[in-house]
Image (cartoon, rainbow, N blue to C red; front, top):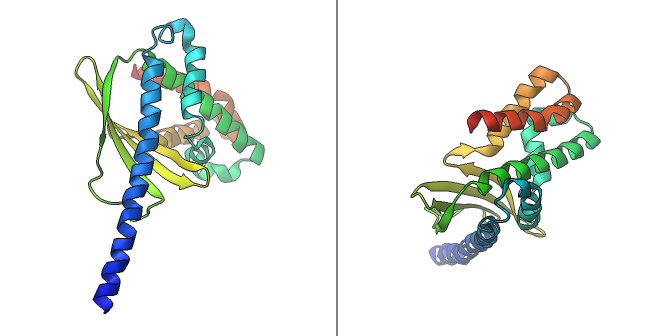
Length: 205
């Protein structure tokens, strides 16, 4: 009797977990397809169209990315030193930086297609899912993107991304910590954040 109950309980959770991954993956597939349409527009790829491309990217990602959550995570332990106004301000500055950096990056990337990779194992928490997507370029290169998704009241939200194994949230958190050592206050870091991130992007390009 007990074994039957345990088996029934296990079966009852399996479809929920699978359905949750399906929901999360469908969310990111929709985002990816909309992004591909956007960045294959030749007019959008022109250098003078960066602002328009940023608006387009924001239109695709705006309801999916939890910028407030990611911003606080990037601030790390220093969020305790920040006022509510500074936390809110950094969220907006961080969002603008992400959109601008992403727009510049994708404008020079020749997309060929993508594939969603099935999960190796089920998530122990149905409301937290990992969606892996491989992006293929016309020159034969493949880029592995790993999206960390959390189910919220308004749907699935993106809270972190790995690009070819590089954890973007951790990378930005390290940058924030380095700037805190340089400028000492959260306010000063926010003032210099966009400039610092532009320098990092140019150095790595």
